[in-house]
Amino acid sequence: MRLVYLGHPFGGEMSNIVSAKRLLRIAAEVAYEEGACVVAHWIPLCEVLTDCTPEMVEHQLRGDEELARRCDELWLAGPRISGGMMREAEAAWRAGREVFDLTGRIPMYLADAIRKRRL
Image (cartoon, rainbow, N blue to C red; front, side, top):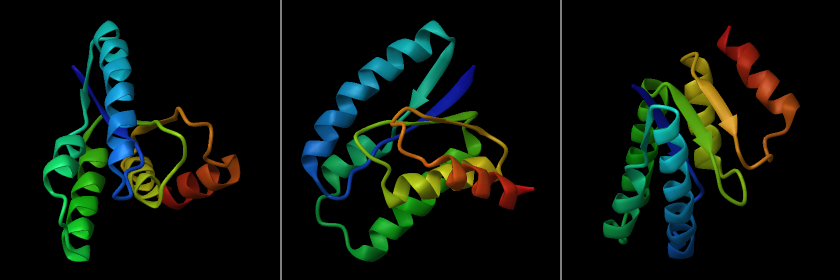
């Protein structure tokens, strides 16, 4: 079974969690139809870790990068590409994973540049 990591902007805004949960439901349905499983561990973490220090945030972002490397695919969703999502995308590309920009916001020149650094 393929594992799909779902990236979505958070930035400390709880309204982004509501949006992420809506997209997670859609992603889970699509993944089910394709025989895959969606990983979005950061959603409940963001709900319970509301008083994070900058060090804790960085620690979680490094964990997100690791999961993006380990999953088979990365699906980027939401209204924009955040800095954390770009870190996840770069980690996934460097690991040779498929990255799908469902936001339409990653400029092709940037995607090409990241891919070239991986080689």
